Amino acid sequence: MPMTRAQKESSVAELHEALGGAATVIVAQYAGSTVAQMTALRRNGEGVMVKVPKNTLVRRALEGTEFEGVASLFKGPTVMMFSDDVVAPAKVAQKFAKENERLVIVGGAMGATVLDAKGVEALAKMPSLDELRGTLIGLIQAPATKVAGVLQAPAAQLARVCGAYGAKE
Image (cartoon, rainbow, N blue to C red; front, side, top):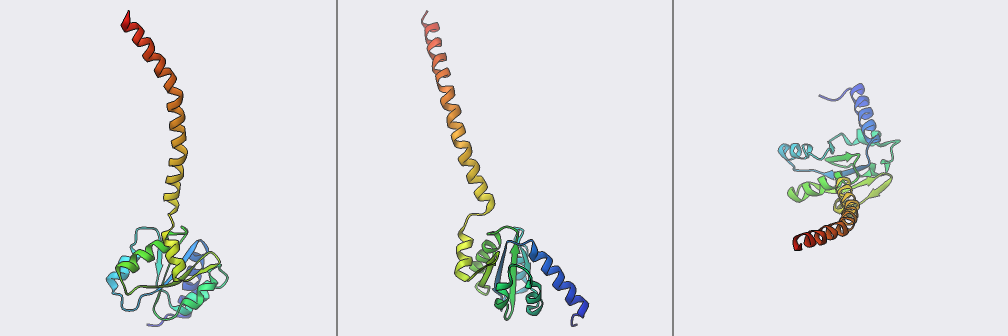
């Protein structure tokens, strides 16, 4: 059953709004993928939205967003992945493409910057925001631990010296 005009307008408005909060959009072709594979992609667990919209509707939804540059990538059976995390969609797409050869990444956009398939691959290799936060916290905590150890060392040495004199007498 074809979509009514109101349904199309609603779909475009929903997609446009969702793209407004996205940091990255990845576009891939999924010809020949099974329903089970696409369901697995949708349930990626990374907080990445996966949509399989009609190409004409997604092109309209992209108008007025910073992702307008990827409109030309929507040809044939395409799937789009987007998130407010910059690297998560690329990581999900890359991981899924390795496991399922029928998913072919054609490109994407990080903000207004349009990426080709190689750009998406490079983005997928970058550490995620959580990984960067963990590394940064580790770097900040390491010197503090060393400073505390250095400050405690003289007191510990003094205590050992006093303990040695007390045991001697």
